[in-house]
Image (cartoon, rainbow, N blue to C red; front, side, top):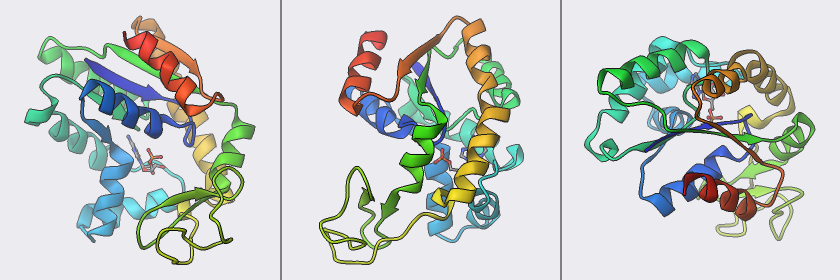
Length: 213
Ligand code: AMP
């Protein structure tokens, strides 16, 4: 079972992908996470990707596509996988379709987590995280007990560079221009399912689970 998560940045794709991964035992592959771990480890790829990510731009295909194809060729992907953050453009989707077709495979489900832009801006610009232990918060929805301080380890919370308001705006316009056309692409392929991402995360997951069966 090959699943592609679609939706704007901050729509909750990652949260849902993690829940699907747990229920169905499929690996959750997030290109954003792969880039972030490369940044953390100071790799060449991380250095190159960071400048694009900090501006809310897409990392170029030459750094992204092969990375993804290598990842899905691994043993743990034999029974399927969930892609979160890839494809992000029509050319990336075409590369994926062609690579899968070589092995007689295809994307089985494209799950579009639909959330209006206004909600996205509110969700993303309120996100805070702990630079030490990684715990995440939201100033409005999941506030820490003491403002600006991590409940778990007492460290001062930070805002991810790409969650800053200017970058959020860029990420949304990149989404509308380059990623949203994938909805029509997968609809044409007959595998698109849209869920209402404004619902509570457990309700969104229940909708997804009934689609996946
Ligand atoms: P995400 O965690 O999926 O929101 O990704 C964070 C950032 O990583 C994006 O804003 C892009 O800069 C970069 N990124 C992640 N996936 C891709 C992709 N498939 N193509 C290009 N850039 C990507």
